[in-house]
Length: 306
Image (cartoon, rainbow, N blue to C red):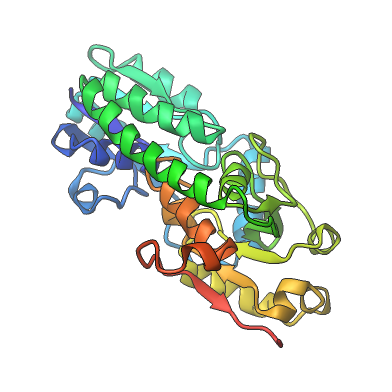
């Protein structure tokens, strides 16, 4: 099954299924597993790799969407040369991948034409279902069941251990300037990990908030999981904001309960590593239960005054 993935999460699913040899092309953002870096790239984005401040990135995205201009471009000649039988994409978020309609329209002109599989998760159950959808589409349903069995065991392990613990108030932030709350599967991960997400709502979009909204939500813990950004970049964006009086007034800032995680790798990609994100949250929210239980995933704690 000659497969092209336009999604980092889909590429990770293919890798976890052990089917990377069948993947003939990927998006410009696909970088995991390591072998994805060797595949032909079939998408591009004008500001990919650009270190613009977060506010300027947000403004660029808003302007492009408002004007109807695409955020991503598809490399049509390369796609034609690759002759895919299956294209993995999504229509959940126009900011995350090429517009679904443009992908379908192009696919209809390709030899075959290839099947276009829409992966559109809004919950943890949907993420697991996507693993099975990709496995079935690539002719490996048994591998999908095997992978999900392991993922469910890890989820259940966290759920059982955190079930009786106290539930601190947690705010997961997916963008810093402007601030966006978490959405879709992330509030559910917080809940399973033994916390209460006080900004984002399960199964709903991440939406723009203000730091005043964050203050009113009164979180005990603040987790910076910026969409598409590694932890180091999130710290870079946080530092000029952290001295503002409204942020200094936040309890997590004063008490040193601000945690920076790799949002790009673990939180904003709805693939197998979403379960890694669950384990990251469990260790942050309940270190008394989970300290040392999971691999080091580069979480950084920003110390406060107390």
